[in-house]
View 1: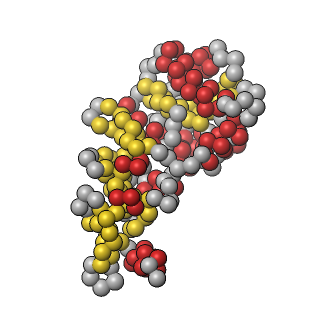
View 2: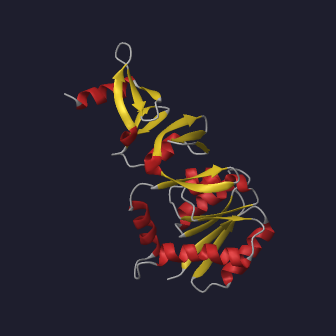
View 3: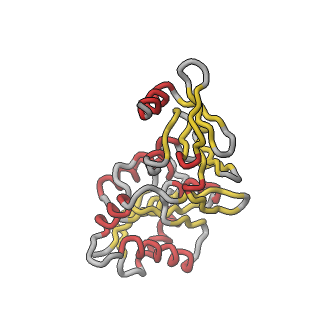
Length: 245
């Protein structure tokens, strides 16, 4: 069974180039093209395909907004001329990030990632392989920008996550990083037995909590191993107190 792919890009030449390269792969078939965000959301939900080539900047909705709105989640390869979106792309679980203009070798390397992701184990349909991948458990690493590089940070090394507008600050024992990802979306991908939402703006790693200490009437603060003291909301404070009864 062939992997079905959709090309989402507002540039006709970019779509044509991808279509040509996909046409040379026997195990992939291009089932459609879209040129704006809303059209892409509709096509992904209707076709329920296995692979989406997604431009970051499109009319109507950006590629990032498309992924936040689709009901069905295919494997995604971002294609864009703007490197600054790479961290967000990997944080959202993209398989790869093709920086325009890219050549055939870089395209083929990305497609090998696709083959590995949807082609094993033998006998499992791509749709089932995707569902299996999404069930494999919480994220174990998060990609962040460090200078001009994009590096993986083990989630276990993170002390806490803090909402900062449309971004999240990731704090480890040594460094702080900023990623373009909502705290709610991040929380859904974390291990709930290790990471706890203590406040609308904070998620802490319980492995790095030294203590929950009282502060004022009915309030708690979480004291972290790096000395940080983070507020605990009233509802979470009540839950934590109930654990000790």
